[in-house]
Structures are given as structure tokens and as C-alpha cells.
Length: 206
Ligand code: C5P
Image 1 (cartoon, rainbow, N blue to C red):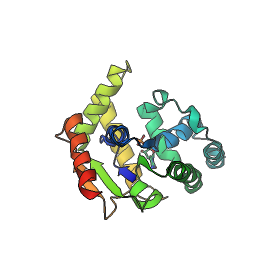
Image 2 (cartoon, rainbow, N blue to C red; image 1 turned 90 degrees about the horizontal axis):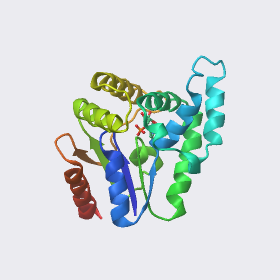
Image 3 (spheres, rainbow, N blue to C red; image 1 turned 120 degrees about the vertical axis):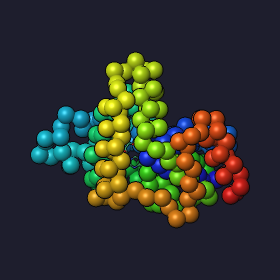
Image 4 (spheres, rainbow, N blue to C red; image 1 turned 135 degrees about the horizontal axis):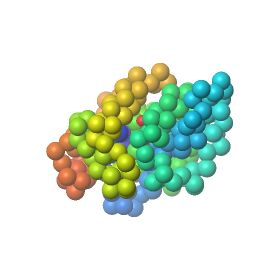
């Protein structure tokens, strides 16, 4: 079974994908981590004349076994990820890694922005997870404060809105909901209720 989960930052897509993977015993790839891995290595180099070619090299040699989820979860790395995600050759290199992952076990769950539209258009089920910007900023602020990071709601909201805009207008391919994706708005749902709603959709469709 192949499941594609897409949606904007802090919509709950990662948590839902993880829970579905555990439920069905499928392997799971958070594709945002790949972009974050490249973005993190390019932070502070934005003014370099060879920024793009360096980012492409980093993407082509990315060690996926060595991505530290916690270190990559900051808002700054998220913005850096959005920047490198606009380079077509970076996307091409990371797309190859995603397709390899998908084909390895014959079944998988991938979450990201373009899984249902470009990486895995043949998915058995496509979910598009959304939540309003206020809810997403509140969730992300709480998450980062719990980890001891020095963040504010206003700062996180601003970063989420900037990233939404960059992703919507990405010249390498704007993100959109696949025509056959099932929309799930988690704004008013607890984690448990959001997971149950996603599970209901998967069970209904497969
Ligand atoms: O999902 P997450 O917030 O970790 O993604 C970080 C950034 O990586 C996104 O804002 C987006 O620019 C980029 N991304 C992407 N395609 C994906 C996953 C993430 O362009 N499939």
C-alpha cells in the first residue's frame, strides 16, 4: 500500500503519517527532512555566488541515514529548506531518493508537499492535511517551547506565513492539492481525532 500525505507546515501531516505507518506496519519518510538536511548545510551561505551549485552537490550526496530530526526542526532550518526547495536540480536529486525509498519495500507512507502530485501520483490513498495559520503557529510554538527553544507565537506565525507564501509561489513547482486527494482540516481536532479521521478515510478508500 502506498499512502501520500501532503500539507503545509505544522498542519499535523507528519504526526498523522507516523501514526498511520505504525498502524499499518509501513515504512515512513518525512520528505521535508531531506529538504531541511540540505537547507541546514546551506545556512549562512546565502550570499555565495555558487549557492545553487553547492546546494545541488549537497542534495546529490545527502546522507539520509544521518538526518537529526530534532536539530532540523527549527523554524530557521524550515526557511532555509524552502529556499533550496526552489532549485529544480535539488528537487530532482531529492525526488530520486524519495522514489527509491518508495520502491524499496513495495509499500510506504511519504509525507511532504508534492507526494500526491509528483512523487507518487499512483498512491492508493492521498491525504491533504490542512489547518489555519493561527492553529499551526500555536502548535509549532508549543512544540518548540517544550524543547526549550526561545521562540514566540508572533515570530513563528510570521515564519509559517512566509514559508506558505514561498511554497505557494515556488518557481520550481507550486504546491497544490491533488484532484483525487482527500482533504482533512485538523484546525479543530486533537491529535487523536485527526489520526482517527485520517484512518477512517484510508479504510474507506482501500
Ligand atoms: O514539511 P517541512 O515543513 O519539514 O518542509 C520544509 C520545507 O521543505 C517546506 O517548506 C518546503 O519548502 C520543502 N519541501 C518541499 N517538498 C517536499 C517537502 C518539503 O519542497 N516534499
